[in-house]
Amino acid sequence: MKVITHAGGVRPEWWAVFRRAAVAEWGELFAAVRERLVRRKFAAVPLATAATALVLLFSVLQHLPGGDRLVSDVGVVKAALPLDVSLLRTPLSLYVPALDLPVWGALVQVFLVFGVAEIVLGRRLTLVVAYACTLAGTLFARVGVALGPQHALGFPRWVAHVRDTGPSAAVVALAVVVALRCRAWWTGGAVVLAMALEALVLPNLAGLEHLVAISAAVLIAVWVEVFGDYWPRVLTGVGAAASVAAQRRTRAVITP
Image 1 (spheres, helix red, strand yellow):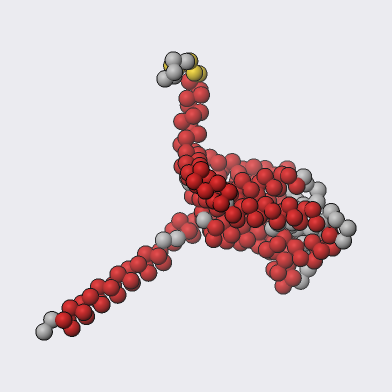
Image 2: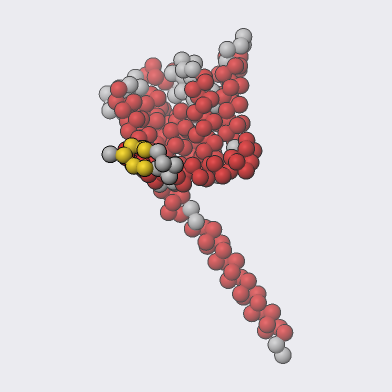
């Protein structure tokens, strides 16, 4: 089955169906990102640019003589470390790429996903989601090691000494929150399904941390959806009530 285009050409019907589905899934997201980028260029995504630069910086540093020690001291998290040390290092651990993965993949993921999230969610919520979900994964690793291998969610003791860094948990979490915010249900479902399959096929620390990050991301998305405008509405109402009361007092003073 084929359809006639406005230009007089012939296009397969499946293409029209795909186009309508793509517009329904990504139309709102594409319009928001395109409008901001056209108007402000790279100035629209300073957070994504800075995050990408940090990933590149740490990648270069950890391959320099003595650089690996510096990166380890400021940004490498392991479940064997004291909790306070892990908490202090967690913000920077997000930008320390894994040694066994190509850094260009991390750079592309961070710039694209952080950039889209920065435009759709705003910088503050983007940072909250990225750090909260990364922290959730980091704490889960400690709980898993404490539970031990006899538990379904536990890990052997040697996992406590595995380097637990990288932006992947934050990237996955942000992708899910953006999908939920833009009502891109199929995209969000695809991300969750891919991470679940990863955890089944490669049952390691990273795979389970991704699922934990997704769970935290869904909770944050639901909270923002339900309560995000609650306090602004309350404050607006209080301000309006105070303004009305002040006007009444002014009339009372003026009226003899």
